[in-house]
Image 1: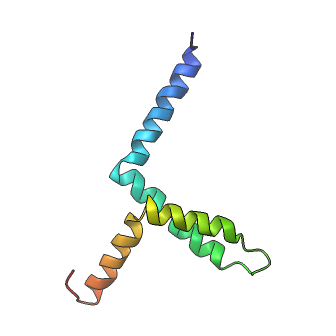
Image 2: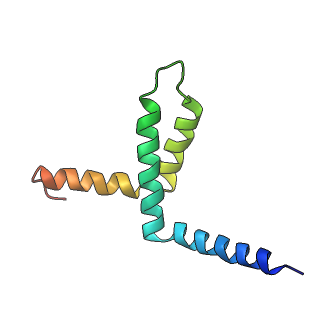
Length: 83
């Protein structure tokens, strides 16, 4: 039988899973990936974690593209172009 602590952790895990599935959750993860990739790419070659950067780019492209899409749309609007 699960303890009250285990049950509470399971409920919090489900809450986190539901959040990352939401539009807001996907936006937050996408934003975090964009910031992390940018910062990691600025590292000197000798310190760059290329495989991590590539894995993050893969996750961003396949599961969390929303931040980049929003930023691109914002850039186009600022340039006065129609979407």
